[in-house]
Length: 121
Image 1 (spheres, rainbow, N blue to C red):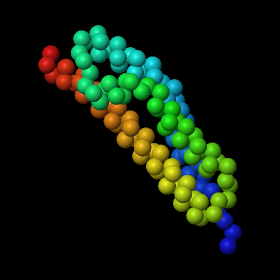
Image 2 (image 1 turned 60 degrees about the horizontal axis):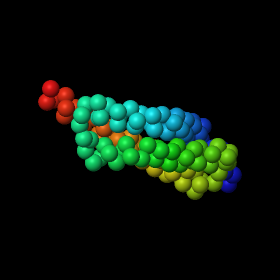
Image 3 (image 1 turned 135 degrees about the horizontal axis):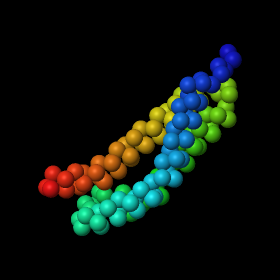
């Protein structure tokens, strides 16, 4: 049985994931500097979770590189075996889920103290 061609949808999602993660990875270090300046301007000591996120401003490149690797893998194979397509889909899902969880944690860690400060004012 001949291998089917790669799904255009799989390639499109891998492209979007890689593009978004690389662009976000470029933007996050300056954003972390801005958050640190904002906490300093408010005169508050950020909680440990916010410090963790701000102390590793370049960690976002791990997500960018991972999503770029999945994109290259998907783009390089026009007729992969079905087993490899399953692995590609799993890898793409894993990168997307990890991205959503990581950015969700960062948003929670950075915005919770700001909202708490707003509730006091």
